[in-house]
Image (cartoon, rainbow, N blue to C red):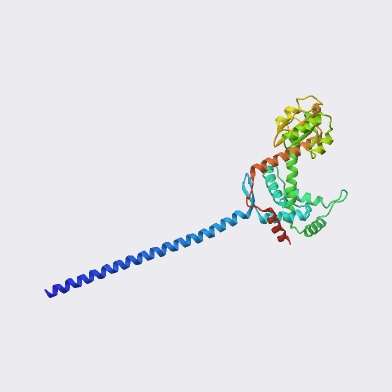
Length: 326
């Protein structure tokens, strides 16, 4: 009986020890889980701060994005600084005339022009760039040797502080602009209906009616143009190259009459028709109309394809870029 009691006591002690071990093991597991979860939370929080900071930095790094047929082109601060350097070097601007927006809008325009030129099959070869640069050093009656050309060209870009690649890129962009302008001029017909008109474009309806009444009362065009901040223009216009509303009025009212104000874009037009004809279109008018068509294309393309960073501070970017150039 004594032996049995001892065994029962031993089993009870063993069971009690096992229970305590299980409880302690469970407590350890709970502590480990808490420690692990705390570690995970800390790691996630740190990663969130790092990733958030990286994303914030990246989102503020781009100044503008331009959609092209090949994809989105992001313009960054370094690109802005490079363009500012180039504009100063080629004499397009100086520190007193340049605006903080000029370098950025110039990059955006160049990207849009290159993309559009490509869609029209317009390209500029390396040979064309070289020939254009070489022509800068030639006179009408004298050719220049390769050696002299290279020496003079190298001296020029050294004085500008530009590399050969930077200057060639500038020349190529300028040639593409010229090619695109010629493309739009070629779209202007050599003959067609035209109207000679004096026109006012006013930003609001009340001013438009004021001009109309004063004009009909006998005030001359030049006086009214000065009174209303040179909002008037005159000359020949080609049918089909203004908005339909403009053509409808300009080619319907009698010669010598002044139209009622009519809405056009963001304002109002008032027109006085001086003459009309149907025949050959003067080459200067074709060039002016082609240039106007190019401008219309650019403004529309800019509205459709360019996105500016909402956090962009151009004055700050300009100040930073100037520091980089010093």
